[in-house]
Length: 391
Image (cartoon, rainbow, N blue to C red; front, side, top):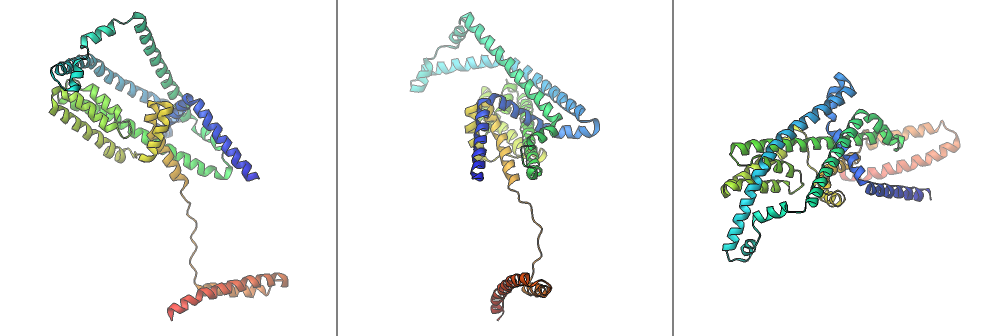
């Protein structure tokens, strides 16, 4: 009865936690992102802690990381903002060429393209929209930007807190585990933290290096817009399964402005750089590993429905955490190996036990004599097949 009550209590607690996570999934994703960020910066903090202390190490790590992120964002934004107008002009020209080709062709798809309105009419429709509608859209974009910035600040602040007080955090959740299981639970948690941190560092490093390498390559190739396709390819590679094909497609569209051969060459270069950084550079130099595809697919289906694009990007990280947890929990601790004993050694031990029975009182000696008799019979049964094989 107690076992049934315990199982029911565990099931009810699991369902309650799942319901609470679903109800407060916005806060849960912020908490998860902060823990992931803390795991990613853990090696840098550990390296500085022995020299300057925990608090100073956390402050230096996060300040330096935010400074690098700001410099990277500034360099990328300068190139992107400068190329947006050019991209809009080229898109408008390509749109008009498609309309012109559709109006002169008689096939059904191109004839349909020929009935599209000209690009100037689209711009006029957008510019001639109601001022209140444009104002609402601008205010909505501003609110979204402020909301994203606030969420980023919350994630960074929580991550710094976990990094500073990680022992207290571990003691808090380990208090829910029975005392004999706490050492193993701590090992499982630290294995998950190490695997997730390595995966996050690898993904961020590969994306940043992909953006920089592709931007330099496209600029050397005199691509009209080098920064936009490089940024898109570096971000799209984060998408599981379809990241590299999507990056290649964006590169082909950017390179096709110089002709079809240029688009093919741009796509090939993008695939080579991204695959090299993802499959060779990251596993060898960053110790990053890729999650299993089956578990990633299941997590994508679950997380995209709950969190949208963030869930899609977070699926591979959660898959790494689940795989590390399972792999660590199924590890069996090796037991001390016992030396093998022959039948003759066992018979000697049985005979020595018989001699010791003479020193015991009669009731106990009678009971143990029966046990020794059964052991002697088992040894004799095991000895018969060996003698038959020798004979």
